[in-house]
Length: 218
Image (cartoon, rainbow, N blue to C red; front, side):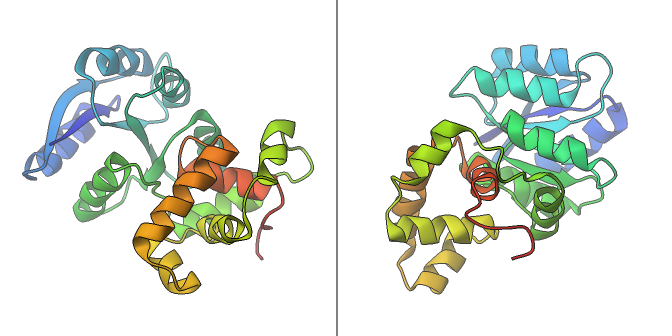
């Protein structure tokens, strides 16, 4: 059972999400919060697998709440609710440790799938979001020294996998592109994350652009 916490300052939005997710046999909404501080406290109380986090909330916003939740280590994956009108929020959420993004005008089916994706430890990186955020905010040449050094630890195959990840490819797509089995791909992805010190695939993508492994638009 996937345990979900809803964090949004609009009650109608939370109610709608609760109804949609409550129709699924494998998903349970275990709590709600109407601001970031409540989200942090509710996460500690209910131990959800996924936090569905709005960004703009009164008091502590969703970005700061995400930082605090992720900083505890071993906690839930955070799925950010967002729109395209604040690109800076998207990149800040990536750096805060969010595992993915969901557009607020997404379909109910997309909501359910997004929750399942991040619950199993994958990143939810829609190609249009990846392109827009990375193109605007990735800054090669301003990388942190430690991840840059760790890049040298990647094998040639792991480097290829990282490039595929940066393009938003799923494990199945990477397997097809590199002519590998999906189990082998999962092993390579795990090793890439470990060597780069990345929490998840989302952070690995950001590092790939920051380190110049791939470039926006190419």
